[in-house]
Image 1 (cartoon, rainbow over the protein chains, first blue to last red):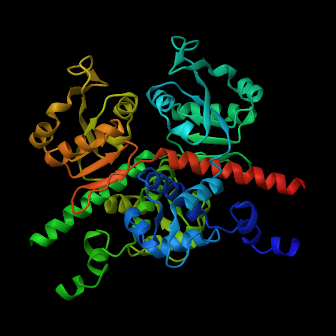
Image 2 (tube, each protein chain N blue to C red; image 1 turned 45 degrees about the vertical axis):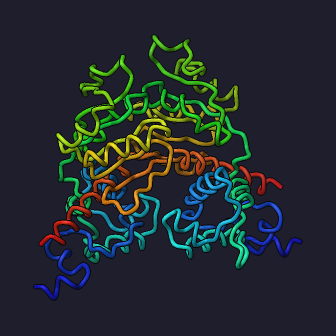
Length: 235
Length: 235
């Protein structure tokens, strides 16, 4: 078996379904979207789907879908398409959705509360264990059933409870201090809403930076292009 | 001039700096991120930067940067690099950041309030004119200085005030009704946080769907790969 293991993707394809190391990160980034669409299809009772149908639904090309799924060995059969349930389960397995994680949300402002109230975490196997803030009015209370502790205790709490993920919803100015506490406390991932680019060089801690403003800018751009286009077709 | 106009990019490059129609949407999507990084560089007093430096900073390849910026005619000079201020201004112009837009936020829950409190909109030339909700306790009040109106008046308000953008922060179940009212009211863009994929076929109205869960899933995936990698190197 050892020689087979060394061929990228071969071992994984047959056995563990872990992503081979050479899958482009741009493909990985697209997997959650596949997973979401397939989940929606499953709930509507759709059992199989062709790459052309899936492409139309997701507004991408069929060749991109075939290319992306082939990175992991491909799950389709010529003339049959994809089995929706199998594909959904396998992508979920690749993404690690069956794993269990714990998270703390740092910052109990509007955004922290919004994140405390959503079902998004549970759906992805992430348990929100605690909120942290510095405001004396809310420290010691519960928000949507999640206890709020003082930010001073963050590092110890993370270490003691082996927290996996720290969610940053603090102001930019506080973000570096909180990040240091989270890393010292041993978290493995940071989900960053602090409106600054968090880069951890030479660290095993993974970061996802959320920049909602980029999406707003893209929307404005699309609106501008549409307007220019209309203006152009009128003249 | 007419014959030149027909060559994609030629006219635009020389005159208007509007994106040529054949720029891949994946490049357009990356522009806000370039704009953000260049803005940060400007604020630190950096005057010029090479594609290699910028690539390192943004964690992409230098050839991607050169390729992306070449889609718009390229702004770099061999051996000099990019002029940070010029490039920032030109990308801003391409994205339409100098244009002025108005927006309403529909849903004054935690997320709506979080969006009402951020400076992100102003920074992108978007003026938040009003919030809409159905809860009698908050209709008629102001949140962060923004008046809250009843959702029943949404369509008329948008028409009367020629609102450009509707921001959807309502529950999934209410999203389609609100979308219909926004479109009837004449908005040109919808920024959708309602946790469902909004697709408007045959419509001039542009949509940006936000799926925060996809980012959380990507974070979990990266953590899983890191863990597998560590396990692998221990054995």
